[in-house]
View 1 (spheres, rainbow, N blue to C red):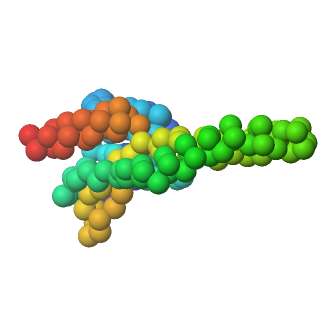
View 2: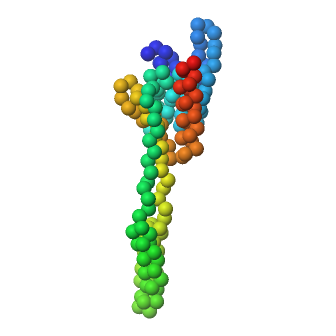
View 3: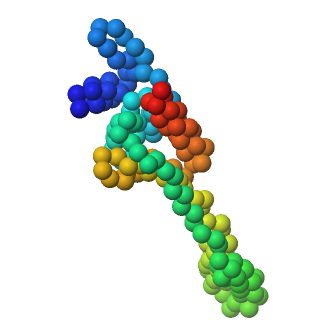
Length: 162
């Protein structure tokens, strides 16, 4: 516990140097990103608040991928129908009122955009057993950032095994 608070204090100050019995030594940094730092000893993640995980206490590290699911054919059909209705509405409603035509065509076009727009990409979550519970260590919608974090954690875990 004393070691954890000491590491925590130095990481929080932005220093990656510890004093070990009067001799300084550098902490190997396996990943440093905008939201996380991984050393051989600690994984520090800042999301809503700062979380600190001791690498030696992590077990059963695994990745969970969340996919948005396939875009249904119904959404695409509704989007195309809205576009067709917008095109037809102009000559039908046009003679009665130009303002009404613009409002109807605009609303139908907006509906088409919402229906035809592709949904956002999936996101990834790294979970691990930590102090008797399964916890979310890190999550990201950016595949590159997530892969870099995972590589850093693998290196840190391997470093601890040596």
